[in-house]
Length: 97
Image 1 (cartoon, helix red, strand yellow):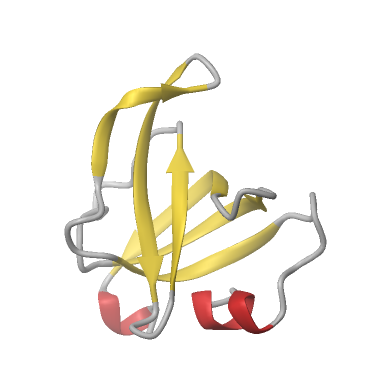
Image 2: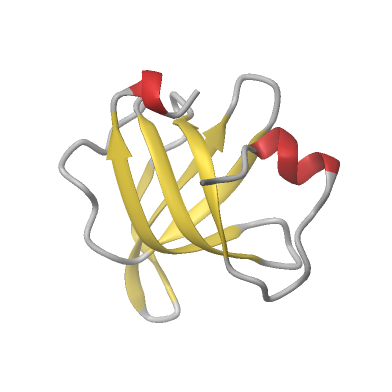
């Protein structure tokens, strides 16, 4: 269903290939404001407790999105190591760990 940050660190997906990244929104990582490609953006990190992947998202956030909550984001990992999410689903932390 999704790859965790540790899965990605162990075996990075091919450049430009879309996949799902899942884990918890890391506490203290959410940055609101700023832009990405001329659109308002939110930046945060997804963690599985062992590793973290920085994420940028320009869409409408799910109602349940917040630090410490579970999230699955669909998008592409950039060559800079930042995951560019196009679609995001959030829910209870127990589902994503």
